Image 1 (cartoon, rainbow, N blue to C red):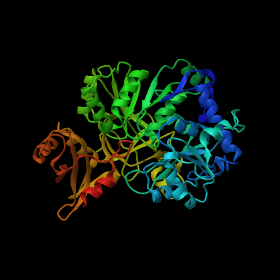
Image 2 (image 1 turned 90 degrees about the horizontal axis):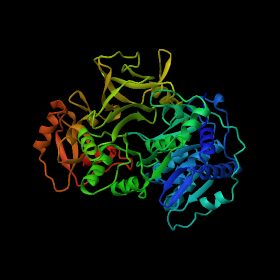
Image 3 (image 1 turned 90 degrees about the vertical axis):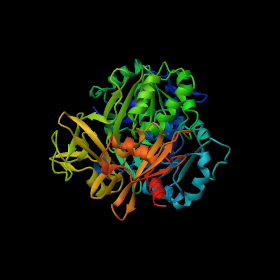
Image 4 (image 1 turned 120 degrees about the horizontal axis):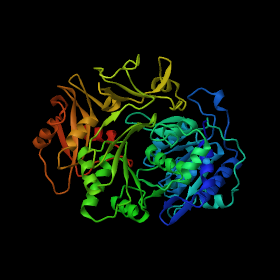
Length: 542
C-alpha cells in the first residue's frame, strides 16, 4: 500500500502526541503541537485558494499540477512545519538555497512558478529586492529570526498560525502528490526533481527498513513509532536534501529531531554540547568538511558523547583517516557512509567501526540498483572493464520540473525498466563491490585521460598535514586540462608540494597527480559541506 506523507505524519502524531518531535533552542515541540501547527499552516494556504490544480494522472512526468510553496529558511522547526503544512494542503514544497544571489533567486522562483513563499525575516531584504520580478508569487509569510520589519503585504508566521484553523484540512491526500527537491549539481542552473510522496517515502524517508522490508500498512508505521526512542541531529542545512531527509525520516518513525543552535554554519562545539545535553543517538554530517572539525574538537576538549551510536555521512567523502580518528575518540560509534543523490534517494551504505575498521567508498549493489553501460544499452555484469553509470530503478522520481529533454536523459528506460541515472561513474567488480569514481560533471580530461576530482581529493587528504582539499581542472597547452589541488593545511602545520605528491602517489596513478598546488587559509564549501567547484575553477583560472 502506498501513502501520502501527510497521512503518515497524522498517524504518528495520533499515537505519540506527547512525545517531543523537535527540539530547537528553548523550543520543545511535541508531536501533537507539530500536528496542530502544520494543520494551521495548511488551512492558511487552503484559505488563500492554494493547493491541487490538476490530478497527477492527467499530466506527463515532468509537469506539476499543484501550487508550489518555496521554503527560504535556515534550519528550525518552521522549516519542517512548512513542509508538513504544504503536504497537508496538497501544495508541493521546495527548497531554496539561502546563498543564492538575486539573479539565481529570481530564476529559481520563476522556474518553480512559486505561489507562496515562507522566509526568515533576516532574508526579508532579499525578498524585497526580487518580489516584483516573480509575478506568480502572491503570498508571503515571514518567520521572525531578527528585528527586521514585516514586508508590506506579508503575513507574520506566528500571528497567521494563531488565527488559522487547527482542524484537519478538508482535502483528500493522494500518494501521487508531489514534493520537489531543487538540485544545483556542480554545473548548470538548478533543476526541480519531482518526487511522488509514495516513492520518496520508500526511497529515503523511512518507508523501507534497513533489511529492505517496505512498510505496507499504517499499523506498521504506528507500531514502529510507539517503540521509537532515537534522537537525531541533522547538522547540514535543511535547504539541502540530506538534512531534511534525515529529519523527515525521524518524524515518520516517531523519533526526535534535534537542531543545533548555530544555524549559519557547522559548529562542532555547539553540536557536541547538544549531543551531551539531549542524549542524541544519531548525528548526520557531510564528509571531511564536518568530520575533520568534529574530530579536532573532540580531541582538544572533553565532551560526553556516550549516547551517540551512529554518525551518518553523505554528500562528500569522509576519508579513512578521519574515520579512524572519530572511532578512536568515540569507540562505540558506527560511521555510516550513505551514497545517493537528489534523483535516487539512498542507494547504498557502508559501516565503519572499531570492529570492522575504517574504509572509504566501498559499497555493494542493493536491490533496484544496477550499473548501466555508458551508452545506456544494457545492464553490466560484475567484472566489466569499462566504467558504467550507477543507476536505480523502482521508487524513483518522475522527472525534472518542466524539462522534458532532461527528464528523458536522466530517467531513461533500459530493457523495459525505468532508471534514474544522475551521473555517477562506477565499476562493478567481480566480487560484487562498487568502485566509485565520481560525478561525470567533475571529470577532468587531461592528456586524453579522464580523472575524477573526488579520487584526487581523497588522495591529497591522506597527507597528515591537510585539513581540506578541493581539486579541479585548469586549461593547459600541453594537457588540454591539468589537475590542480587547492589545499588548506592544518593550523600551525607545514607541508611541501613534494611531500603531498609523494603521499598521492601511494593512492592514485601518476597521470592523476596534481600538476600544481594552491595553498589557501580556507576553502569555500557550500553550507552542506559539498565542494564548491565553481569557486575552485575561479581560483585556479586567476
